[in-house]
Image (cartoon, rainbow, N blue to C red; front, side, top):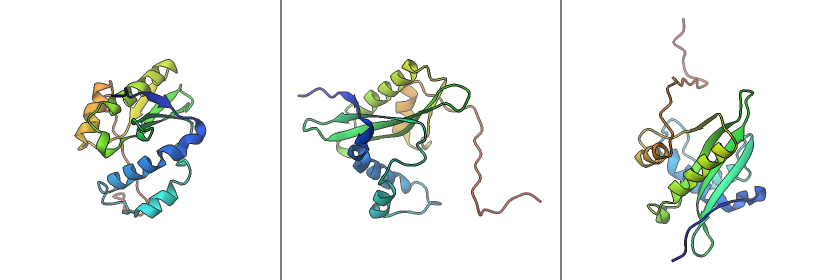
Length: 162
């Protein structure tokens, strides 16, 4: 049995994780009823290039199976908003048939190692509170629930202000 290793992908290797990124978007969008549910073709078209929200230094770690196919990835964005280097686990995904093998743990461990090496002052990850597996995974890696109140504004919604 082959040992799974984490590798850092080259800048031009976005195309290698795009199929898994599409699967991630397809599986997550159903949890957000207020957002449009896009068909696979539209998600693929939207993800033709690196998502514009990923501004900063993009680092992608991946794990391949025994035939060399990428079965999991962790997308990290590093940036300095003027208060020190910050990091975000922007995306993490392990393909359906490869879950439960420790791939997610390996990828998150590599992300936190990068944060430590680069002396990141703050690192975070967004996940749904009802995604128990993700909450457990990130908690085991040292991430904690945020102590800040995060409020959002959506255009077009009525305001409660007089």
